[in-house]
Image (cartoon, rainbow, N blue to C red; front, side):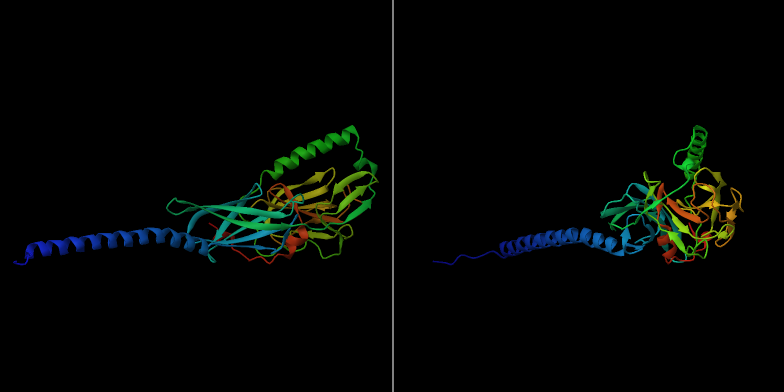
Length: 322
């Protein structure tokens, strides 16, 4: 019986079909590998190049925060939100870093709170990033003090003055600059002993409860008081509780307030440099005696001035901000 012969053309056709099938599956496998690997690599790289740091490293309720943000790409703008407050960040071209001020109120409970950042790139693309900041509980003292009855039980005429002052302060506190005016460390307004700290829970005349929302310096009347940093005078006039009062706007929603002055040396709208004299200490308003009360206010909440004065901040040129 004659053996079956395989035609050369049929043999080559089978080989070509087999090779085509192998090449097809190899192409599909490689494409799948490329598609699955690209998103993971892009996501990892973007997250790795974000850097968010803050001072103080251990945050407590009532503390101000200095934020330093470096980003993966160049941004046209960068803003943030923390605990329901808008955070204003300015870009320093020399260091290619975004700087900003934030804070945790006295009422903030211990826990981890996300700082949400939103940026717009030069091309108009929106980018978001989130970093959690842990807030710890601080311990604040309790004391009992006595003040004149007129400051705990004001007359109808005095209540009218208090109401007018409240409206004025609300108006002033809403006229803050979003751009940074401060540069470098905040310095103490006087060289003196601290007589009462921030956060002290006070019992006034045995029954009125209040929270001390500033830092008191034990200075005699007539002591020169200096601006803690560069800023603009928002308010310079007498108030019922605060006495002769000066409010400076340092930008990014940060204010410093100087109370109970015997004399005011600045005018509203004036630009003030760090260390420049703004007034003389005294005992005007609701005060137990001559002293200086320094308060720090950010985005409607009061923060610990002592913490702000301890922060190690960069000396920045305002003109370098974008």
